[in-house]
Length: 122
Image (tube, rainbow, N blue to C red; front, side, top):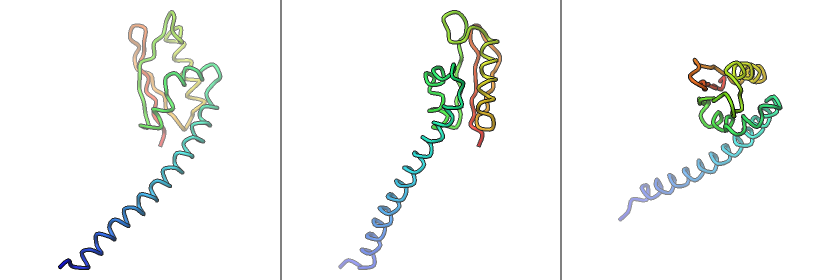
């Protein structure tokens, strides 16, 4: 014979899990909606001439997924940036646009590229 209390425990556990899943699903949908709004605001702050570059690098996507991203920015002939000085000036402008939201750091330049770190200020 099965103990009725044991049966009740299993049913209660299944019910609580379903309830928690429904609540989590709702909260994630709310968070996603807020992320879309925040991402849109950040995109609007990007200087017009940088929007395509930011979009091509998936910069905002990675920031929202991980809170930070780093990659090498190539510069020189045939690149989006013409020189290291161009990269520095542009990242300074982007840093001002995203002040208190995203921190941007450039490391030492290598031949034709520089590593950039973007970190969400939390």
